[in-house]
Length: 362
Image 1: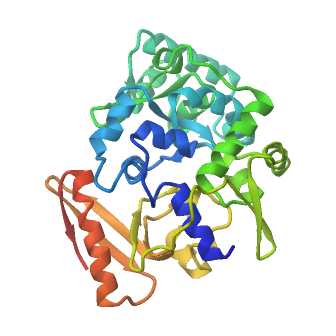
Image 2: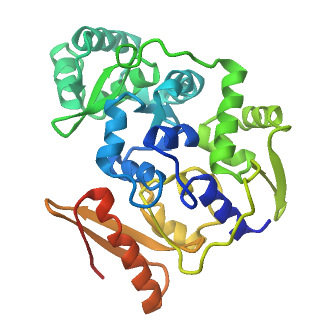
């Protein structure tokens, strides 16, 4: 196995190439979790993996949220992800305590102690009971009225804390703002995996959807220790395969059917924070060190990337207006007119997903 084959296999296992799954719920279930701090980008991350190209749009993904099939919350690494309703609780209980523990120092800086958290819980429970959703602005106002300051990121840390504690989760947007509900009311009575069984289930889901991948990739993605990552993977040895690539051991699930090489000139427009980048600790199969600096910014932003065949050739940006979406590019190297034409044609296919005219600018 070579590095370019790793990328092609990852594209296949992540449903970027080949037939996607039937609906957003199946996609999120297959992926385990999809990074989602950039809301509109995360809709495209799901949409591009649904069915044949053009089979999905933003409304279809958001309907899965309304139908309580998928939910946006903070299950791992203190970062927003899409997970299925059935996975939300056990992933939170498995992964979030480590994040909460690692954030204690920041809580102390912000003077967020147990008294503040307990009081904020009372405010959230009393005002959300009965299925009421509250926007972030409404929550901040209620906290302030209850004597809890929300400045200097105190408010978002309180919200994140109680999301990781499985008290609240995000609901469908309200007046175009993020909104929150009580998790037990929004997703009542779903079964959970526990302990080692949960860790092994997460590892299997990750390898099948992200492989080939190393143990360090899994530990980084899930936010677990390398010893826990190794323990989980060892439990899966009979089910998974391994291959050595340039001295590193890669884990992957058996691929159904032969892996066909990508057709020359195949273009993919991946969204910001896509799992093809965020899903791995080692990203050198896709980007050089110089390209990484242009793609992954110091403030933690992962730009949307353009793939030509199985290599990144640049980043792209979309600006959503009332009646159109403007798409522009920044390439890592000079491209031929043919390559630029293919990329532009791919961008115009986004019209189906955004349900607006796409205008490509040079």
